[in-house]
Length: 467
Image 1: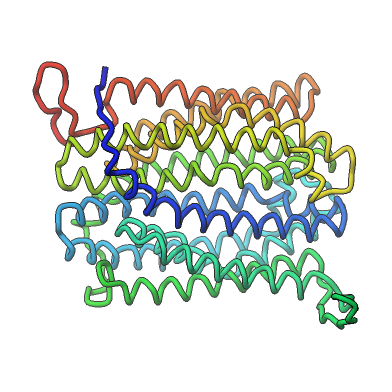
Image 2: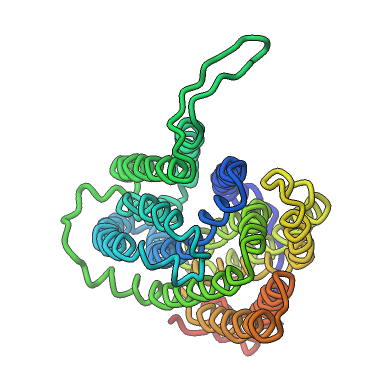
C-alpha cells in the first residue's frame, strides 16, 4: 500500500491556489444561474433552445482545455525545476496553439451551426432559434480559445488570481448585457421611484450576443495579462513552432484531448437521447445541469491546486512533497464535496423553482439532482487523483477510464433505458451516476497502488524510473 504522511504546512499553499479558481468558477456559475433564470422567464421553449446545444459547447471547450493541460504539466514542472526561460518558451507555443485552434474551431462551429440542432434531435419548432443562438455564441471563438489556454498557462505559473479577476469582469459584462439585450424597454419601480430601463428585446438571441461580447472582452484582457506577466510572458520569444516543447506538451495533451473529446461526444449523444424525451425533459436536464455545476466548484478548484502543486513537486524531484500533497488534498476535497452534496440534496426543489415555473420540470429536475448529490464525494475523489496525474503528465489512464465509463456505462445504459425500454430522465441520470462510481473505483485502485506518482519509492526500495 502507498504510505503517506500529512504535512499541515502545505494547507495554506493549497488554499492560496484553490480559492481564486473556486471564486472564478463561482462567478461563472452565478452567471449561468442568471442566464438560465432570465431565459427561463421567456418560457420552456426558450430554455430548451439554449440548452439543446450546450453539450456541443462542452465538446469544444473541453477539447481546448485538454490541449492546455499539456502546457500546465510542462510549465509547472519547468518552474518547479527553476527553468523560467523554458516556461516562457512554452507560453509562446501556447500562443501559436491558440491562433491555430481558435481559427479552426471558428470555421467548424459557424459552418455547422445550421445542422447541429437537427443532429441533436431538437424539436423542429425550436431548431431555427437554437441554430441562431449557437452561431452568435461562436463568432468570438478565437478569444474564447485564448481565455481557456492562457488562463491555464497563468495557473501553471501559480497565478490563479489574474484569471479569477478577469473571469469576474467577464461575468459582470455578461450579466449587464443580458439585462439590456434579452428584455424590451420597460418601466420599473425602485424604492418608490419610477425608472425607465432600456432594452433591445432580443430574447434568446440577446443572451447569445451578451455572452459573445463578454467572451471577446475576456480573450483580449487575458492576452494582455499574459504578455505582462513577470514569469511566463512570451513577448521576448520568437513566434515559431518549437518541437522540443510541443512534443512533450502534446504527449500529455493528446491523450487528455482524446479523452475529453470522446467523453464530450458522449455528452452530446447523452443529451441527444434526452432531447428525444421531449421539451420538459430537455428543460429539466438543462436546468439541473446548471444547478449542479455550482456544487462542483470546490472539486474543480482543488483540482487546479492539485495539478499545479504536483507538477511543481515533480519538476523539483521532491518525492516527500508529492506524498504529503496527496495526503492533504484528498481529505479536504472529500470533506468539501460531502458538504456541497448535502446542500444540493436539501435545496434541490427550491433551486429548480428559481429557473422554471413548470411544476413538471421542477419535480423532474429536483429528483435527478437529489440522486446525483449522494455521489458527489465519490466524484470528488476522482477529480483530485485525475488532477494529480495531470500535474505529472500521466494522462493515458484517465483517458482509458473516462472512455470506458462514458461509452460502456453511461451511453450504452442510457440507450437501453430511454430508447429501448422507454424509461425517462431519471434512468438516464442513474446511468450517469453509475459512470461516476466506476471512475471512483478505478482511480481508487490507481491511488492505493501509488502508480499515479512517478517519483514513488516501491516496497523493494528502488525508485520507479521516470517516464
